[in-house]
View 1: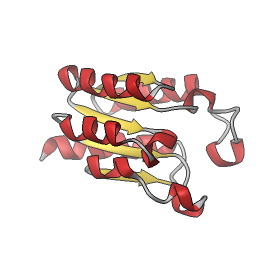
View 2: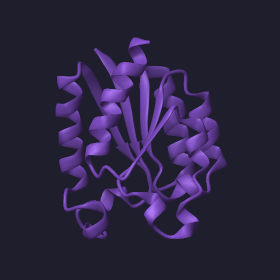
View 3: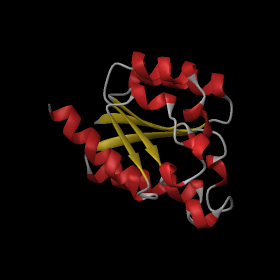
View 4: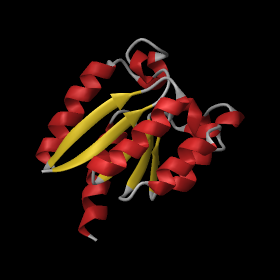
Length: 145
């Protein structure tokens, strides 16, 4: 079974608690459970991890490149600032899909610029938690090509 790494960035461990009007009321644990189910139904195993530290996330992307066929990444606030994560995404050997739960272009202007988007084949923003399901479906299609 192919493995998809799903890596979440800073503050995403606080899903369900942090700004539920923006991020919803589903916890990070519940999201992980959903992702495993969605992945299995699409024929994938899901490796789910969350990092609050930029360097740890860069390392995780590199490690995932050794063991996973695809990467779904939500760098959180680091998407606006991290050249290091961008470089790691560009070095990933398979499809990369970036996910943002909120519609970042309807938020504060500083969130509109996403450095990391340049390292993704596809960016999904504003679909809520379902953005991860769309990302799994997108990965499946990208791997078929």
